[in-house]
Length: 392
Image 1 (tube, rainbow, N blue to C red):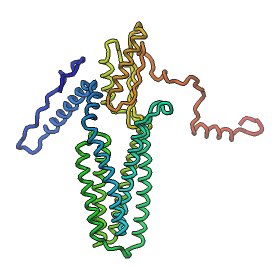
Image 2 (spheres, rainbow, N blue to C red; image 1 turned 90 degrees about the vertical axis):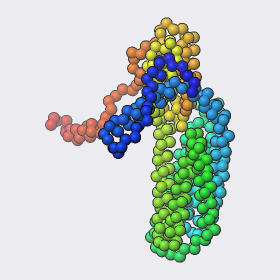
Image 3 (cartoon, rainbow, N blue to C red; image 1 turned 60 degrees about the vertical axis):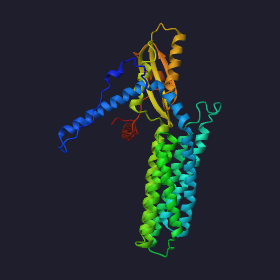
């Protein structure tokens, strides 16, 4: 690792963390204290390294994508192909056996295929911004695609729960005999998923590969559980098949509902982690000596990416050309940080003011805000007023 510029001499605060010594005593009260201290110094060292490496994030990201971009594309395309063949195999097995658990896994495989198509289409759309129609680009379309897919998945999960409840209410009936051919096909599909899971696991630091890594991991659990419940339900207890289908549907429902809410808060404008805000403040403070203070720093989500707003204070006698150049270079540096889509830098000459006043409405319509309690009191008082005008 090359020695990076350290204007605030943060390297002196890095602490060497020693490995814990093996003790004959299995547990002592000092172990918790040592773990807390080592955890604190580890986080501090990571924070310092993140601060000092902020200026290299854009270059390292470009070099990493140039080196491993082909591997990530292979992982995405291979995962899409495996999802397609998995859906065909699962559908064949479900239709030939009539197992509700296999129908649930086939529905999950179909939605995985749809999600792959949605992700590919939205990624293609976001890479073509069309600035005349969408001035800030179309990056948020990926998040909208995820939410739409989650809505489809919840509908399918609810339908599977209804069908499972109907099967349980109908009781034991005639079912098709499980053949060895569809079961072997499902086993081959699960093995293919396992191979892709290992490959995507090695590339999980990339967002596209990480999504498919999670997808393959979940599919291994869902398909394995569905296959077991289908076999056990056919051989031993009949109601385990619809119960297994219901369990898979509930897992799909809660998993994708939580994903939908998570992405919804990203669109609403969820605040960035505190560690990232601290990094933005450090980059701003060390950008130029003419920056006297950092008045405000905000970082919030706009979809998957982040928007950063920074208010800096400079000398009142600074020329317009100098303040413009400093703020523009700072904006470009902040946009070079990982996951930052846009950065806005506001230059001020005073920090003794209310930041919220800058976004105050020009025409603030006054008037008292009436609560429900006040409205009830007013209606009650009107009822007590006499109709003839005499005092009460």
